[in-house]
Length: 256
Length: 256
Image (cartoon, rainbow over all chains, first blue to last red; front, side, top):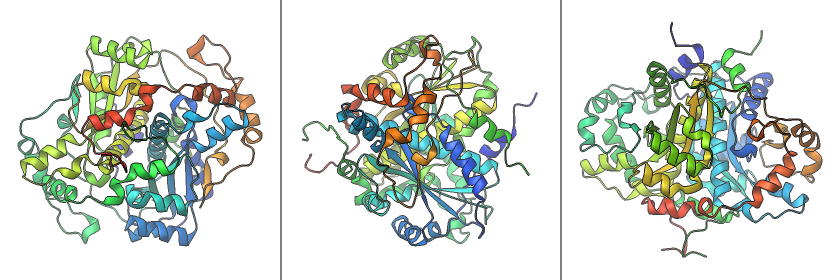
């Protein structure tokens, strides 16, 4: 008996798609993706996450600028998944209940997790329908500006963006490190020498062609890590201050 | 042409499974789930998330106690998804690069998001194979204790737990609110009266039988929200202090 099935085959074949055909996603398909989002697991059934569907060309451009990725403006569908504790706080207010916990970090992280689960569920559904997707963690290059552009009220916060469309490119499957470095039994396992452990992977990565950079070869994984972590983007590092400005109580010790 | 397919049909049929058959998941299937985790999208390709597979009975029990859910100890597979910036920091150290950004909140949130995406991808794959799953946000009832039990080193952090096994129950599909309350075009939409908007949903929820509580009827959604948000669990609210203890730099203004 083969344990493989179509769902998993597609999941194993996941590639990020950054260029799409100039073709809208039929509304019927979009509605189906939203229904998948709706059926996603949610912490305690609270459904404290939402989606902003960006259709306005000007707003798409503004978001693309924040992302520093011009192709974002061309994504046929652009969804921004958000933490949303605003709705439930309003429900409590309308019932004259106590609202002070709606903005605590417990609710923030539960909703943040929910938003991510929903995004990945939509990604799997989209890919099962032959669509391509690109995650946009880059919306957090300026979380405050995203809040402003999308008019995000108190107790909401942007989590991740997602571009969806019919694939306009067919990238190579990107090499990944061995899961023995990422799955541990009962306790975290520290390896004495990571460079030794990833030697083959480092080499494999150098055979990968990244479509982003005009098909040039990429660095080894370890070189990519060094380069990438040299960058400390102040606005991205300051994310918790924006979380607080959105009305959440960070409850950081020694900080009132 | 029907747009429905098997993948999406399963996604729309998602239910949380809390009771499993006393039957282990074959190792071949477990390996396939891990391969799906491996192929999940990851921020900038950095793969800064990991999984602790809990097989030890005593550790399972300790985690079940933290979760305050005794069925957690009986889950055939118990996975804890974690933020993992430890590995990449070690790689940078071994290459004598600068490590100071590895513990910033940008990296924390990127890795947190990655861990969630990976978890949901595993959930979809598991359900496609006829397995059932239960998310355990409750591991964060005591994040510090989880770090201790699983020996999580600096720059790692628990995100969410997941129980997996062959379903030992067949719960009703749980009602969800209308997505017009959760999907907005171009800007967040504030409704003047949420109780009015969720009136039918509130009623529908009262027809739902929750297997958790001996098949008794549940409250309306709005009543559930009020009850649930009355609880402010101090350790859960204090999550950022544990994040800081794990070596991350919160960079909260006015807090040094």
